[in-house]
Image 1 (cartoon, helix red, strand yellow):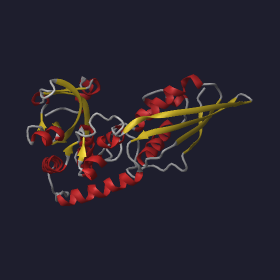
Image 2: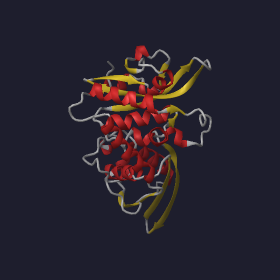
Image 3: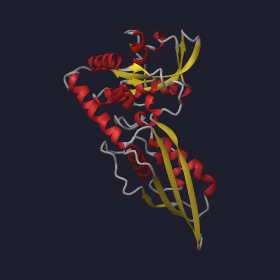
Image 4: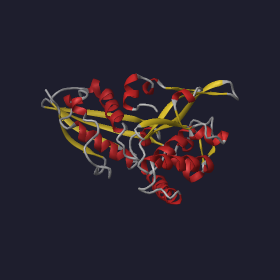
Length: 290
């Protein structure tokens, strides 16, 4: 029997301003509709809470059965889809790669065969709403300084964004080994402090390109470091130009002061290896490389 959604709250959860219909219609893709009648709405509202950088997200629902054993899987599915790509500059990869996961607490009460559940999600977000407001303001300043407008070609937009990041962001060597220093992995670190590690570079490029109207994704994997002689975790971008996708690695471009990592094919990135989720044939069908 299908379970019904009763209440979702974290104060009042409003849809993010990107709006529109969900890119992923969850109820026809997975079986979350077994638990929620309107699963898409649940996901959209959780996504909106993450965009606002809410510190606490509460999902309440009632059902006619005991599904306590499914709670972890239910929340994992909700969170995965809440950070899935939507083509909105401050959703999708922008949330996913500035988020260290979440802590979950839940409870259930039973009354005459009806089960009431409360799920409390505490996300580990790397920035707060005030910091994100500063990023948004900085994005506007940078876009204006680069003279990016509707008449600028996507290739030229990418060129100006790449050059700006390479010239204005320095690699954060001070905090590189400090896993608890999350600011190094954010657009805030890159654009406001001017220092970041590869993940911070990648989300800054993502946000700038998306805000400029250029489709972009964050790619993770490994890259061979000639200095250490080791493969290291790495993040970079792909961007769509004239119907094909190209790699952009502003981190290496900045460190090496090189154009060799701007709009290049996979074969040109011989030291880079994508994570499995970005290297399969299904992914390449969606993102055909130039």
